[in-house]
Image 1 (cartoon, rainbow over the protein chains, first blue to last red):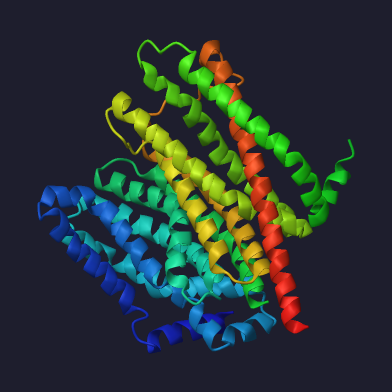
Image 2: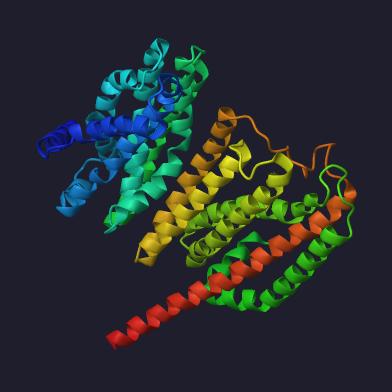
Length: 218
Length: 245
């Protein structure tokens, strides 16, 4: 399993854009928002947590179809499925690789983007923590969507239609936690809910992803 | 009653024979109930003392909203039956029900908006109930789109069934997450069986008839659509056989 993870990470790095692309997309979203709503610091500070969460979500969505599509095309997914590894473990590793290449960089870079969005000083800790807790859930849910649409020729748009409604609870609690942090309120409740969603999703959803992947490989 | 006898209807032929005999009764009963419920509700109930005649949209809004949720539950059950016992009729019934559910969701949202404009002063508010209905509509759209996108029937049935199961969990999660996110404008449930404070009986009886009409209409539509799906699939099989032979 760790060999699979290392392989996926290496592929992502060497294929170019694996690490950087999501981050660059996040930067563009954050740059474009002030053009859309105006450069007032107060307004930006108020919407900063939500925009940062939305940007992270969209950056995550952008790279979802790469999770399984490349392996599907060159046949290595069939090889992986026939290997002694359980398919549940494989999809978990795929999700983990996706999180390390897109989620983790976003978490690390988010304070910087917070500065661009003039996030209030108290908000940085909760923002980083909420992204750290929430982005794994985004990757795991996204892997489920990728497994559903892996056999389709133009699965990209359908993938977003299927995955975005599933992102609603994560987004609500994540953005709420970051917002409460920025306003100086106590972010504990949404933090616990967010952590609960992530833990539940990581524990249960790989079984569904593996089940649909089995159907698609039939 | 022997519940095992229910599984006989997993045979498409038996299902079609029985449902086709029952269909006229359901259709006629649906029309009778809808006409009675709506005419009674629209013309023979008093106006509400605060809401005036706008209250009458209630006879469409409440049944369609109930159906929107119940159709998803029906799809969940038929998907489970498909996954566990692999009866094709079950998967096809789920497929047949989805567009009806989506339309019910739209009716509930539209009538709600029409009522909300004079009453709340806005067509739309990010209220928990409204928001979760919008999310439910997105789930219906994704489900229908996935059915349409996959060519192989059994693969499509499997994938959409899993999507329905996972989607149900997330739909419920979203419902409560949305509650947490914003406090609502929408009034509480007005037709609960266990509460003291329900609508008055003058509104309650026509509403019941109207709800029965919506349920019967749904059953009739699902029968028609499921039988159409079965026939279409049989035709494809025949065509394929002809090409081979």
